[in-house]
Amino acid sequence: MTSQQLLSVIEPDGSTNGHESGLSKDELLHCYRTMLMVRAFDDTCMKLQRSGRIGFSIPNKGVEACQVGAASALRKTDWIFPSYRDFGMALYHGITPLEMMHNMFGNAKDGARGRQMPVHFSFVKPIHFVSISSPIGTHIPQAVGTAYAMKLRNEDNAVLTSFGDGGTSSLGFHSGMNFAAVWKAPCVFLCQNNGWAISCPSSEQTASESYAIKAKAYGMPGVLVDGNDLLAMRKAMLDALERARRGDGPTLIEAVTYRMGGHSTSDDPTRYVPKHEVEEWAKRDPVARFERHLASKKLWTKELGEKWYGEAMDLIAAAAREAEATPPPPLESIFSDVYATVPQHIRRQGEAVFELARRKGDASAGDGKFPL
Ligand SMILES: Cc1ncc(C[n+]2csc(CCOP(=O)(O)OP(=O)(O)O)c2C)c(N)n1
Ligand SMILES: [Mg+2]
Figure 1 (cartoon, rainbow, N blue to C red):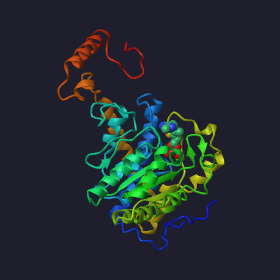
Figure 2 (figure 1 turned 45 degrees about the vertical axis):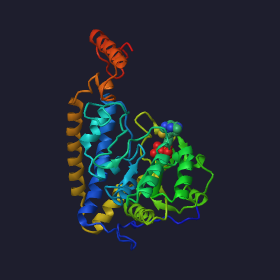
Figure 3 (figure 1 turned 120 degrees about the horizontal axis):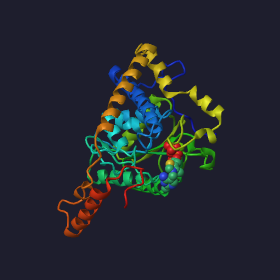
Figure 4 (figure 1 turned 90 degrees about the vertical axis):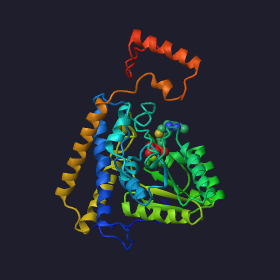
């Protein structure tokens, strides 16, 4: 339990408690469509992984409001240093499911040309969504450094860095929080407390009364927010961004939410997550909560929700087909993507590799046959 108040905006009946979102009808519906898109992307990736067509994915079910509410407060020129569970932030700002699918298949059209794990998206153009780092917390000091650089250049942009409850145990969290506060860097720290760090429950992650309270020791505000309430997330982010842009420095936001699926497609949460806990949180589903809000504004019906979800599934199925049919990057690109002019000694090594590939065949992920 915590002495801090949990910020929430959407009431159980869908009405709001006075905080205006400032979102137009179209913007509210864009938030909703993005959350449905995340869910449809998740469902599709689970099937693709289980049928052996992609190697890995990360479920986002339960945390869609955190991602989309936070993203809705950002300008397109701001920078995002995301966690691996932030699909909705990219989709909200216009990245297409097809661009994401190219990464899931690691093909020639993937921004990282198949040299990152699936889910480790990198969309620094046209938005500023920086490549996801697998080592937990390592992106936090990078976000702070970027924010500090913006301050030195008198830019009006801000930085969002997002991580999990487990991420607060990393060195990157502590050094990032400290430097950001000392330098008054325009950075927002978003801790998505979804209850679990793989199989480690939050109760074993920290002895603090909350994650938000950790901000106090570093000299910045710490805000506790209902992470399943899209409008509360938006409000907390808008306040933190305003503070960052006026030069007053960083804020730590703890979004209290829940991971309604496994950690990844490699995980079996039924081995360690109590069933009653999942059932309890299912009643607080962030998508249903936002649907009630839209319904209170006469913007939502069950039929509309089903129609849009069906459309999202069709769009993503088409994206998966196209990405699967796109060939992998050519073998030569392991050199040509690195050097403008390939040095002689590397060229000789390359030619030896290509000759081997010609004789023995190319490598397919996981077949174990390529003799390197
Ligand atoms: C430095 C480091 N240690 C351990 C891991 C293995 N690992 C991957 S995800 C994860 C849990 C992270 O949990 P949390 O930060 O709560 O994020 P969530 O997965 O719940 O979104 C761990 C321990 C890692 N990737 N990097
Ligand atoms: Mg977690």
